[in-house]
Amino acid sequence: SQKIEQNSEALNIQEGKTATLTCNYTNYSPAYLQWYRQDPGRGPVFLLLIRENEKEKRKERLKVTFDTTLKQSLFHITASQPADSATYLCALDGMDTGRRALTFGSGTRLQVQP
Amino acid sequence: DAGVIQSPRHEVTEMGQEVTLRCKPISGHDYLFWYRQTMMRGLELLIYFNNNVPIDDSGMPEDRFSAKMPNASFSTLKIQPSEPRDSAVYFCASSSGSLPQETQYFGPGTRLLVL
Image (cartoon, chains in turn brown, blue):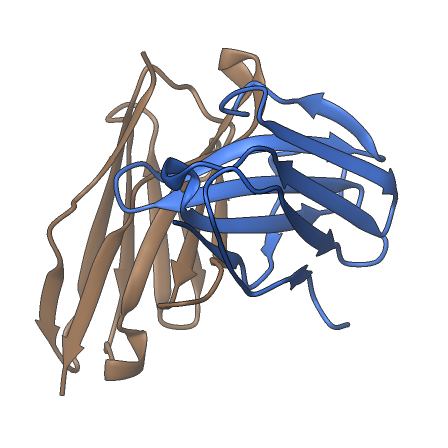
């Protein structure tokens, strides 16, 4: 069965360091992979989308990589700030499963210490 | 644009009562999605619509749940009768484009507590 795995343990890092979050998946061949940010009491907010033929995407301090061989995406936040503290969700499309909509991982909580 | 609007923001009800959640998508968006989020199961897709037509309702838990989209600017998710295990945060999201996998814009959610 299809599975999306994100580290359920919170990631604690010091301000200014690079945060790296991992999204692994099995039994999917997604055409898209997206990352969302969710703050407590709010809905997820879109950050980045990367396509299967793209290896890397950047937006300001954010960088996403997509390795379709390893079935893994890495999400990096450079020069992290306390304001980056939130839960980060990865989402995959399910075109190859016949379910043409996004499936979300359970998310990883990031805590940036000042 | 005001973004996706959901109401109510909070709902507390007793088991057996009918609950209706409402959503107004972003104007011009073709797709509307209903999700449920709990600590145990994360963010689950319940149903989605394309141009007001339900496309995939395989995530709807059971017959107690129903969703409608009578026009492009309004959708409802109804639970009748409600049960304590329905307690969760329910999100509505919308997107534009030719595919349902495109970037989604979420509303603030409705926090439902069934006693």
